[in-house]
Image (cartoon, rainbow, N blue to C red):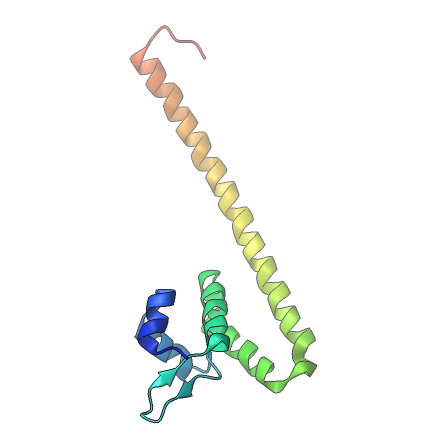
Amino acid sequence: MNSIKEVTQMTGISASTLRYYENEGLLPHVKRDENGKRQYDDEDLEWVHFITALRATGMPIVQIQRYVRLYQAGDFTISERKGMMLQHKKDIENKIADLYRNLDKINYKLALYDVLEAQRNHADIKI
């Protein structure tokens, strides 16, 4: 079992964020010790990493809450949870494709600047 301080050190996630995730129902199984302090086990840490990945890839809290509720409802929701993950994967792939298209535009502009700088510095260079 790990304290909230240990989890913040392991994950880089602030204690306030961990408390927020728990209050929002995103960490469904966090236990408390006899003094009421949070105790995180390996399953909780897996949830923290999973939530972090979903947040980092743009999934809204509301959708993560829905996913957690479905998880808690049991195995009969596996298809629905899988569908959520497939849709999120598709959304991420579309964002990545957009980023690559935009990166290509930036690289093109940088190449133009390279040519312009070369022409300015060496008037006799032909490209």
